[in-house]
Length: 76
Image 1 (cartoon, rainbow, N blue to C red):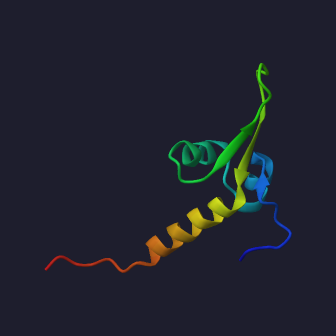
Image 2: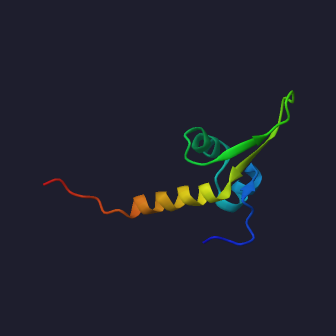
């Protein structure tokens, strides 16, 4: 379900609250290239703000759901 009120990009707190995906799995998915993210950091700054693409998270979850619904084929 795609909510019209959801932002296109959101921080970790929002993602955890909305989808229940906590820090470690979220960053693992990002590192694996399964979801999109961007770091907002000015040149020379030590820290920035990482935002996650909500659409890519929804796509990942939909793909996981579809994969789990696939029937398991039995070897003949």
